[in-house]
Amino acid sequence: MSGRSMARRLAAVSAIALAGSALPALADTLVDNVHGTTIGADGQPEAVTGLMFSDSGVITRVFHPGEKMPKKGFAYHIDGKGQVILPGLIDAHVHVMEVGLAALSLDLSDTRTLAQALDKVRAFAAAHPDRAWITGRGWNQEQWGLKDASGASRFPTAAELDSAVGDRPVWLERVDGHAGWGNSAALKAGGVTAQTKAPAGGAIDKRPDGTPAGVLVDAAQALVGDKIPAPRAADRDAALAKAQSLLFQRGVTAVADMGTSIEDWQAYRRAGDRNQLYVRIMAYAFGVDQMALIAGGEPTPWLYQDRLRLGGVKLFMDGALGSRGAWLKAPYADAPATRGLPRMNDTQLGNLMSRAAMDNFQVAVHAIGDAANASVLHTIDDLSATYKGDRRWRVEHAQIVDPADRALLGRNGVIASMQPVHETSDRLMAEARLGPQRLAGAYAWRSNAAAGARLAFGSDAPVEQADPFAGFAAAISREGPDGQPAGGWQPQEVVTRAQALAAYTTGGAYAGFAEARFGRLAPGLRADFVLVDTDPMTATPAQIRATRVSETWIGGGKVWSAAAPEAAPENKR
Image (cartoon, rainbow, N blue to C red):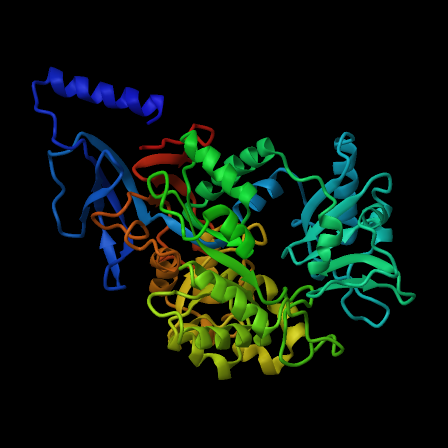
């Protein structure tokens, strides 16, 4: 408990004693003068007008329309001032450490031209003359409109980056994390030459003469990335603190951390030991080696009052659509010479999934292209005959699923962990990459749910902002922030508001085996909730995108307030 919380508690106790009143058996807190919605145990929306939680941060009562609020039996009172109350929102796919590190490094996500990006790189390098490497992320050649002589989309080049910074290595991750752009010094540091062969599951963008052009895709990124000095422990601690603040500002109280390394895990443990871990992290290790290193022979228990657990492993079947690393059944419409980059074959995938499943780790596999999704779904189908019980196999992104394979989602209770904002960000690029014939399987939230998949929505931050309200608006409209296309892109795939709320709350909790701990406003669950100014169950998509979070609470402690954004979070133990 923070010093401020203790002072408040002592003041309240003194006031009760002076009034001659008996101290309640449990020092409960009442939250009233609110209205909102939670998902009930039956999966249906329930209206909420207040709640009560214990001193240990567990909900003891939930009030519904028509029920009278108690006049006594609680020690503390929070007046919601007529605001909307929602369960704490769950981002089912983020990269926590990368969110924080990206916020503390060069960010190119707001650049709209190559010239703007080069100006930012030049300015950042000038402001940090002591850095041996200049690193950052967020570039997107599609937003810049880069074209080659034939009019086809192209990557930026090392020569272009050299024009901004040539005196030291520069390495910049693409917005989706599946390609890296380096200057000549970075390529030299990685030993990347005309003779360098791309590793399996990777590609090196080359000039017509065979020399490296500057961009490395998927597995090839390690050629340069492995030469960059790793963040120090202090850097990771600062990044975690920054990431938590950014999440809380958007009402996110729990996340699935996809690709946790031992260094990430140590940072989370350091924060937990210092009582500075506030967000709930459902961690999925970056491959089976990291899984064994972090957890040993079985998933970890929940730690720090349900704030941290490593229960699964993250694997990769392919890359991303924007860098043409997503593995397709047929060639790319705008690059007929390639079908993308499978990261492994079916046998390798099955072996890795078995290695995790035999020790009861949950398996989450990145799959974007229709060939990758088919491979993952058929492998799940095969393994389900051996690994019985409640496995909750996860497909991360499930971005392009051939309708012919969709039935496999429901047959094995697969969780489709999807990111609605990817659809609004990607739609024009997806049309170019896929052509019209494959769009029926693209970003197909409603069809996947109808096939029996359990939806869990997230952001893939820092690829997109960890903003569940932007995702909610996209999910119910399939329109971008500009309202385009009017009526929605592939509008038959919109979901209902109830489905969207579930996917950002109970769906995310279920996907992480946490539904008995948090994800709803219900007695016995953790008191994780947000107070906002907009009701997503009635507002327009534009209004939902503009939602202002007033307060974010986790386990009965206020971790963020718009009125005092710099105040230290409260953490109850």
